[in-house]
Image (cartoon, rainbow, N blue to C red; front, side, top):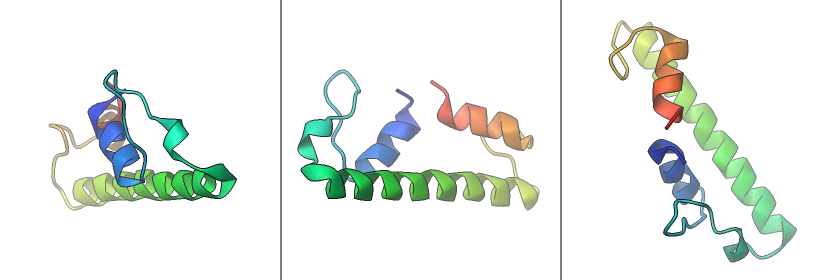
Length: 77
């Protein structure tokens, strides 16, 4: 799993095991799972809009000014 995605998973409230995978068992019930997924989605959207804003303002992100390339460099391993 990509390091940035791991950070977002942790921020959304889920732990990562020693192999880099989410530990789903720490979420109790459907409400906690739903809350995690909503928070994680919000964080991904925020990350994407932040990258777009940076590039739209004339800056590079991960060495590129191409938005799609910047997304790939951010979220791929």
